[in-house]
Length: 50
Image (tube, rainbow, N blue to C red; front, side, top):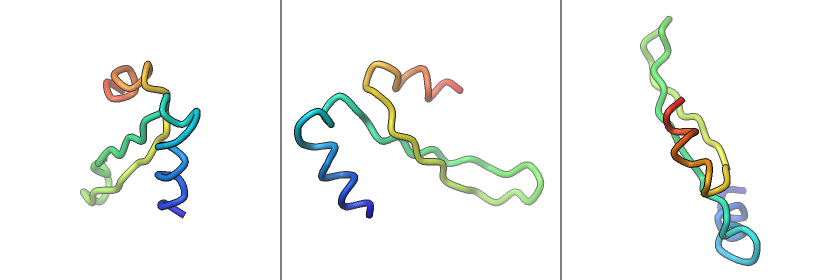
């Protein structure tokens, strides 16, 4: 499924979007999890500041 998303982002209207993967530490267990988002290129900096 990830390959399909990446292929869609590279062609056509998908060029205006970026996939962001954040590493977030859980306060309870201390384990790291990954959060994935697909946002427009204009909102990349704003979403990374959250």
